[in-house]
Length: 278
Image (cartoon, rainbow, N blue to C red; front, side, top):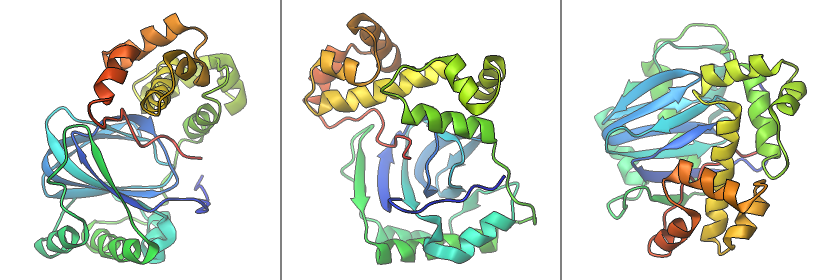
């Protein structure tokens, strides 16, 4: 089915990233990824796509994706309501393309670098977030949307999402602070636990429990950065015990919560600033 996108509270943002990495997620925004240096791998609905310097691709609203930085890179990630450029959004709803990667033309590259401030001060794993007003983002949306519409080869065929996987992600994101079980998630989306596990393996290369723990650790890491104690961060994000929290945190970050707090007191370093937003 084609999802209707409610654009209320959908954000408009441009962020420069150095060596970006995040778990499989979805959100309501249309997302543009523009790589300026190095190589970035993107898992998109279960398929891996490689972006090299000077290339760009789009990610549709509610399309499962993750970022993997096996090599150093610099990229700009732009998110905005799909209706900001209605012609491109209507085009995406009615057409599909086998290759959504485009080489950014010299003219568009110069224009984007003029519109988007320089990322020269970035440190590794740090995002410089650039909130923009609607008129500013509308210009960017039109420039990029027109580029994709005129340079990709399109086929008239609406893109199909995997409803079960998306509904599971939404349910998980809304219940991360509560007790979650594989059985409860499967029942909510109307499949067996075995089918749900196969869906996660297909689209995220993770089990449901691994995904839940990763998401909870990301939230807990932000709580630690905001000044919560380790016990408060653990209890606030659905971990039943401090020992379980410490074990999960170190598995995800290769650091204990104590080590993470000490490191982040010295630099602004967020595990991931792109949590699922619903």
